Amino acid sequence: MSDNYGSYQTEIYGQGALMGIRPTVTTDPRLLEEQARKSLGVRSFNYVSGGAGEKATMDSNRLAFRQWKLIPRMMRNMEKQDVSIELFGQKYDNPLIMAPVGVQSLFHEDKETGLAEACAEVGVPYTLSTASTSSIEDVASASGDGKRWYQLYWPQDNEITASLLKRAKENGYSVLVVTLDTWSLAWRPADLDNAYIPFIKGVGNQVGFSDPVFRAKFEKESGTTVEDDIVGASRAWLADVFSGRAHTWDDLAFLREQWEGPIVLKGIQHVDDAKKALECGCDGIVVSNHGGRQVDGAIGSLEALPEIVDAVGDKMTVLFDSGIRTGVDVIKALCLGAQAVLVARPVIYGLSIDGRNGAKQVLKGLLADLWQSMSLSGIQNVAECDRSKIRKVVYGGDVKAMM
Ligand SMILES: Cc1cc2nc3c(=O)[nH]c(=O)nc-3n(C[C@H](O)[C@H](O)[C@H](O)COP(=O)(O)O)c2cc1C
Ligand SMILES: O=C(O)C(=O)c1ccccc1
Image (cartoon, rainbow, N blue to C red):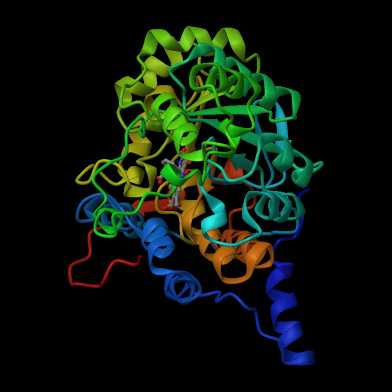
């Protein structure tokens, strides 16, 4: 049995009734982004809330959720409700995973280490991005006994890649997430209009700057140290990691040699790419369009999910992200065949508003909503989430798509 996540609702009402205390982070998913805007500088806010192009794919991500509706069932015994799952042979208390998000010091001084700690407290695995403002080692100690995954932005230099993977392995990161859709940054007007990119000033390069192999190479080539030439070191790191050159399927053999644990490819939208991932010996995929931040005009990620599950779902782990905003969204993705989901922006908004405590409130809120909505729909556990509980509908009108 997993925790009763519904108790968070009781906690909020209880604190309100007894002490007049309200949550510092709104529980309303439609107000969260606006509350975060007030806590952030314009460039940081634009960076997190922005998308590619005219944000058409961000809209599609939300519209795709709006098109699926749950069909609740009544008078079922919910005493054994349980949202735990198994992934890659390990038990997880719930089907929520913190998505990799780079440069977290932009949002709060608690940054990656604070968020990793919050995730560990709530029982949500933390995925550390290669583009982080904290090192692999510091995040591992902050996350303690918590589960942690490592997301690779894949350097061109194999010796550097091998070093990153070795550090991740030695520091208890159990799953390798390889992001495929961001080998080069997309056309992002909200950042372009501010001529803003944090990385060139050395922000978000901590994983590289703390890497012994990268440091040795940089010192040899430049005759100076990373600390004495942050701009030069940033250029060298970015040229290797975001080289503007995509890896190809054959390159996966190298990662397979270097990493014994599960390998998950993030950014899959096409059935044939899902089949390719399976052929190449990967253990899982994340059906994701990077939260609409890469190819604008691409389909909503949820639209891609059912056909990919039909093609490979019984042979590999299928995870999902892009557009999850509520606990109900989690249920919908599970009903369409995802085994678990990753969530990014809502938690980063919580972090922006009230640091690790704010992020924790958002995570607990998502889990409470998941728990309550599952039980009120008569769904006792994740295995019962299937397509009989959900229906695709087309409603007219011009209800504004949320976020
Ligand atoms: C500010 C920001 C930074 C991100 N950085 C990374 C990253 O470093 N690595 C990565 O794989 N995905 C990154 N992503 C994408 C997320 O992991 C995730 O795929 C996407 O945001 C999911 O959509 P959601 O924000 O609608 O939940 C980032 C997303 C945001 C919003
Ligand atoms: O902004 C992003 O979506 C992202 O994935 C990224 C890319 C480069 C550095 C940091 C994050």
